[in-house]
Image (cartoon, rainbow, N blue to C red; front, side):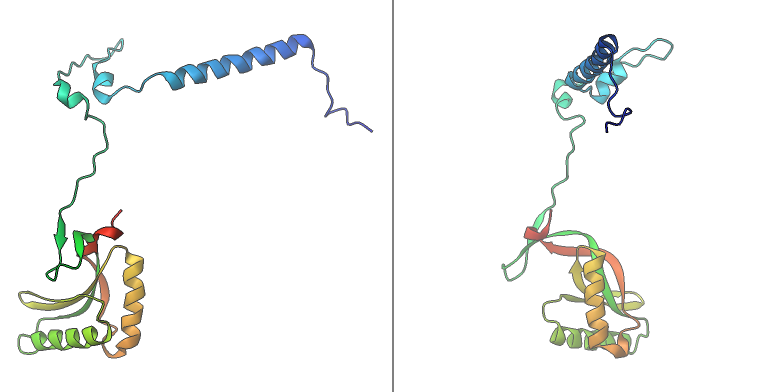
Amino acid sequence: MVNPYLCTKISPKKMKKYISVFLFGFFILTVSAQQPTKSIVDELNTSYPGQGHVVIYQDEAIKGIVGRNITPSRPVYVSTDGSTAYVKMRGYKIQAFAGNNQRTSKNEAYRKQTLIQQTFPELETVVLFDSPFWRLRVGNFKTREEAEQVLDELRKAFPSFGKEMYIVTDEVKIPVDQVQ
């Protein structure tokens, strides 16, 4: 049995109408896709009725670069032993210690640095002094997720000072081959 709703007959007149609407829509899409995109300067220089008029004069050398997406290049640094090339960028570190006791904080920061370096020699550790605070920061992480994974490992390895460790944003060194 044939479903009458699925097999409706379309008159030739309606068919021509549907085809002409389809072709007209296709023509409009094709023409609009082929028009070159205007730069922002060309758009501002275009006059529209009822609106103000703007004229921008620009050098031809600038015309070629306006509107291009330019990513700034970062300087490449080389480690002191010459084995690794890296770039400095905003990333994440783990703050493993922060103290402002002038008598004990410096020694505490260096003691914890030694412990972390012995357990995790692949992680960079840095002791910073920003009066009156001594801080110990660990690692160079491009993403917060990477820092969270290492933070979990540090807390497992050092449960006695795991509660005071947390993730901070800082300038980090990322190897050139890992930068996008």
